[in-house]
Image (cartoon, rainbow, N blue to C red; front, side, top):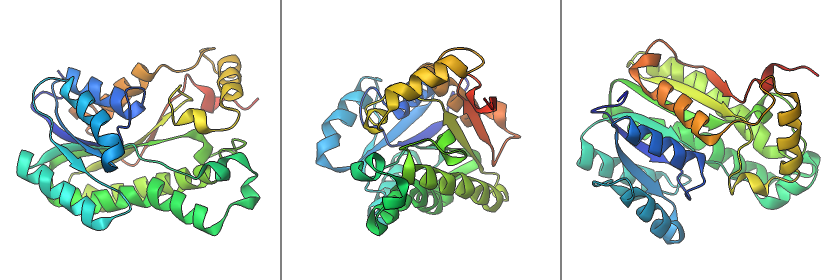
Length: 255
């Protein structure tokens, strides 16, 4: 019960196969009370059903992370429901399909702006609005990927967005550290989610990681969720501004 008595907001649950949902389940297992956001009516039903499956009452709030007013409304709703929160999970990323199918050099200006806004700036916006309701010792985590550090063919503008996200994690950790708020990233290896399947060559990516990672396998979604819970819990109280790789060691291999 690492999160017993803790309250948190999970941003980015889309379906039962998402990493965000796996983290939510693990946090609930460890005793946390959760609130969720959803983007638009299309996802509301799915997130509502998932939240209900945890038992109890999990507040839900509509939140388009490109809309500052909606972010503020969601945070106001969380404050009304919980008062303060002990953690925030950021699991939001988006790039247009065409930006992931063609070469990176063909990235459009609009596609670049959208990917950076949704996948990177949203963490800053959420931290900015939520800072007043964080408890002392609160923890923020964001999901990232190795494509932020090395070129992953066809990951394209999303790799650039994740690089910006990781830089934002470090700068936020510095700013919010004075308020005893920690900010870290979880860099998961490839996991079979609906979002991941939109990346061209994803199946080949899984095979390459399995053949070259020190553990000779791909990471399981539950392992990513458990690592996230560690960063959300008091066990990681001395860790901030870090990227924790949960990829069966693939990131350490040069060839």
